[in-house]
Length: 180
Image (cartoon, rainbow, N blue to C red; front, side, top):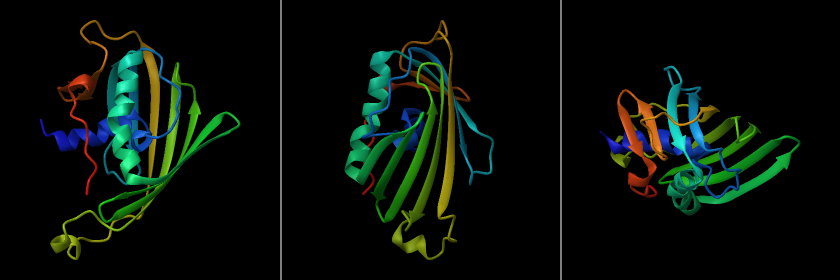
Protein backbone atom coordinates (compact mmCIF):
# COMPACT_ATOMS: atom_id res chain seq x y z
CA UNK A 1 0.00 0.00 0.00
CA UNK A 2 1.44 3.37 -1.00
CA UNK A 3 0.68 5.81 1.80
CA UNK A 4 1.09 9.08 -0.15
CA UNK A 5 -1.67 8.02 -2.55
CA UNK A 6 -3.97 7.31 0.40
CA UNK A 7 -3.41 10.57 2.26
CA UNK A 8 -5.23 12.75 -0.28
CA UNK A 9 -8.52 10.79 -0.21
CA UNK A 10 -8.26 10.54 3.57
CA UNK A 11 -7.84 14.29 3.81
CA UNK A 12 -11.05 14.68 1.84
CA UNK A 13 -12.70 12.17 4.15
CA UNK A 14 -11.90 14.49 7.03
CA UNK A 15 -13.56 17.36 5.18
CA UNK A 16 -12.73 19.99 2.61
CA UNK A 17 -8.99 19.95 2.29
CA UNK A 18 -9.07 18.50 5.78
CA UNK A 19 -11.49 21.15 7.09
CA UNK A 20 -8.84 21.80 9.68
CA UNK A 21 -9.18 24.88 11.78
CA UNK A 22 -12.91 24.94 11.11
CA UNK A 23 -15.63 24.19 13.62
CA UNK A 24 -17.89 21.82 11.70
CA UNK A 25 -20.60 19.77 13.40
CA UNK A 26 -19.69 16.18 14.29
CA UNK A 27 -21.00 13.47 12.00
CA UNK A 28 -23.55 11.06 13.44
CA UNK A 29 -22.09 7.68 14.39
CA UNK A 30 -22.52 4.90 11.84
CA UNK A 31 -21.55 3.97 8.29
CA UNK A 32 -20.90 6.94 6.00
CA UNK A 33 -20.42 6.84 2.25
CA UNK A 34 -18.65 9.72 0.52
CA UNK A 35 -18.44 10.44 -3.17
CA UNK A 36 -15.53 12.70 -4.09
CA UNK A 37 -15.57 14.27 -7.55
CA UNK A 38 -12.78 16.55 -8.80
CA UNK A 39 -13.69 18.47 -11.95
CA UNK A 40 -10.16 18.25 -13.37
CA UNK A 41 -9.89 14.48 -12.80
CA UNK A 42 -10.59 12.36 -15.84
CA UNK A 43 -12.09 9.56 -13.77
CA UNK A 44 -15.32 8.68 -12.01
CA UNK A 45 -15.94 9.91 -8.47
CA UNK A 46 -13.97 8.17 -5.73
CA UNK A 47 -16.19 6.39 -3.20
CA UNK A 48 -15.00 6.12 0.40
CA UNK A 49 -16.86 4.25 3.14
CA UNK A 50 -16.21 5.07 6.78
CA UNK A 51 -17.38 3.55 10.06
CA UNK A 52 -17.42 6.42 12.56
CA UNK A 53 -18.20 6.97 16.20
CA UNK A 54 -17.78 10.26 18.07
CA UNK A 55 -14.15 9.50 19.01
CA UNK A 56 -12.98 8.46 15.54
CA UNK A 57 -14.79 11.35 13.83
CA UNK A 58 -12.84 13.78 16.05
CA UNK A 59 -9.62 11.83 15.55
CA UNK A 60 -9.97 11.86 11.75
CA UNK A 61 -10.32 15.64 11.75
CA UNK A 62 -7.48 16.06 14.26
CA UNK A 63 -5.06 13.98 12.13
CA UNK A 64 -5.19 16.63 9.44
CA UNK A 65 -5.87 19.68 11.64
CA UNK A 66 -2.28 20.33 12.63
CA UNK A 67 -1.12 20.04 9.04
CA UNK A 68 -3.56 22.69 7.78
CA UNK A 69 -2.98 25.05 10.70
CA UNK A 70 0.72 25.11 9.79
CA UNK A 71 0.09 25.63 6.08
CA UNK A 72 -2.78 28.14 6.13
CA UNK A 73 -2.40 31.83 6.87
CA UNK A 74 -6.16 32.45 6.80
CA UNK A 75 -9.10 30.25 7.74
CA UNK A 76 -12.52 31.86 8.11
CA UNK A 77 -15.91 30.32 8.76
CA UNK A 78 -19.34 31.93 8.64
CA UNK A 79 -22.96 30.90 8.45
CA UNK A 80 -25.18 32.15 5.62
CA UNK A 81 -28.75 30.89 5.93
CA UNK A 82 -28.59 27.09 5.98
CA UNK A 83 -25.03 27.01 4.57
CA UNK A 84 -21.64 27.07 6.22
CA UNK A 85 -19.02 29.04 4.26
CA UNK A 86 -15.34 28.15 4.72
CA UNK A 87 -12.49 30.19 3.23
CA UNK A 88 -8.75 29.68 3.48
CA UNK A 89 -5.43 30.78 2.05
CA UNK A 90 -2.70 28.14 2.28
CA UNK A 91 0.83 27.48 1.11
CA UNK A 92 2.24 24.04 0.33
CA UNK A 93 5.86 24.35 -0.71
CA UNK A 94 5.92 26.71 -3.70
CA UNK A 95 2.18 26.39 -4.34
CA UNK A 96 -0.39 28.76 -2.88
CA UNK A 97 -4.11 28.06 -2.74
CA UNK A 98 -7.20 30.09 -1.96
CA UNK A 99 -10.33 28.07 -1.34
CA UNK A 100 -14.01 28.81 -0.92
CA UNK A 101 -16.24 25.97 0.35
CA UNK A 102 -20.01 25.90 0.73
CA UNK A 103 -21.38 23.20 3.03
CA UNK A 104 -25.09 22.36 2.87
CA UNK A 105 -27.15 19.69 4.58
CA UNK A 106 -26.57 18.32 8.04
CA UNK A 107 -24.00 16.07 9.62
CA UNK A 108 -26.49 13.57 11.01
CA UNK A 109 -27.76 12.14 7.71
CA UNK A 110 -26.24 13.85 4.64
CA UNK A 111 -24.25 16.87 3.53
CA UNK A 112 -22.54 18.29 0.46
CA UNK A 113 -19.31 20.29 0.29
CA UNK A 114 -18.45 22.22 -2.85
CA UNK A 115 -14.94 23.63 -2.84
CA UNK A 116 -13.51 26.02 -5.40
CA UNK A 117 -9.71 26.29 -5.22
CA UNK A 118 -7.47 28.77 -7.02
CA UNK A 119 -3.86 27.62 -7.23
CA UNK A 120 -0.61 29.23 -8.25
CA UNK A 121 2.95 27.93 -8.26
CA UNK A 122 4.00 24.30 -8.32
CA UNK A 123 5.25 21.64 -5.93
CA UNK A 124 7.21 19.85 -8.62
CA UNK A 125 10.97 19.64 -8.04
CA UNK A 126 12.66 22.76 -9.39
CA UNK A 127 14.55 20.82 -12.07
CA UNK A 128 11.34 19.55 -13.68
CA UNK A 129 9.04 22.56 -13.21
CA UNK A 130 9.96 24.05 -16.59
CA UNK A 131 9.16 20.78 -18.38
CA UNK A 132 5.71 20.38 -16.85
CA UNK A 133 2.85 21.83 -18.86
CA UNK A 134 0.89 24.40 -16.93
CA UNK A 135 -2.14 22.67 -15.47
CA UNK A 136 -5.43 24.16 -14.45
CA UNK A 137 -5.18 26.99 -11.99
CA UNK A 138 -8.66 26.37 -10.65
CA UNK A 139 -10.35 23.22 -9.45
CA UNK A 140 -13.75 22.35 -8.04
CA UNK A 141 -14.24 19.40 -5.74
CA UNK A 142 -17.66 18.15 -4.70
CA UNK A 143 -18.03 15.81 -1.75
CA UNK A 144 -21.41 14.24 -1.25
CA UNK A 145 -21.69 12.33 2.02
CA UNK A 146 -24.56 10.32 3.44
CA UNK A 147 -25.06 8.16 6.48
CA UNK A 148 -26.20 4.77 5.17
CA UNK A 149 -26.95 3.05 8.50
CA UNK A 150 -25.07 1.27 11.22
CA UNK A 151 -21.50 0.18 10.60
CA UNK A 152 -21.03 -3.10 8.75
CA UNK A 153 -20.73 -6.14 11.03
CA UNK A 154 -17.06 -6.62 10.10
CA UNK A 155 -16.13 -2.94 10.56
CA UNK A 156 -14.90 -1.22 13.69
CA UNK A 157 -15.09 2.52 14.41
CA UNK A 158 -12.40 4.35 12.49
CA UNK A 159 -12.27 1.92 9.55
CA UNK A 160 -11.99 3.69 6.20
CA UNK A 161 -12.61 1.62 3.08
CA UNK A 162 -11.00 3.28 0.05
CA UNK A 163 -12.13 0.52 -2.33
CA UNK A 164 -10.11 -2.09 -4.20
CA UNK A 165 -9.25 -3.84 -0.93
CA UNK A 166 -7.61 -0.75 0.58
CA UNK A 167 -8.79 -0.29 4.18
CA UNK A 168 -7.14 1.36 7.13
CA UNK A 169 -8.20 2.58 10.53
CA UNK A 170 -7.79 6.21 11.50
CA UNK A 171 -6.17 5.08 14.78
CA UNK A 172 -3.36 3.41 12.79
CA UNK A 173 -2.71 6.30 10.41
CA UNK A 174 0.50 8.24 10.76
CA UNK A 175 0.04 11.92 11.44
CA UNK A 176 0.52 13.67 8.07
CA UNK A 177 3.36 16.15 7.96
CA UNK A 178 3.08 19.42 6.06
CA UNK A 179 4.98 19.56 2.78
CA UNK A 180 7.95 21.91 2.90
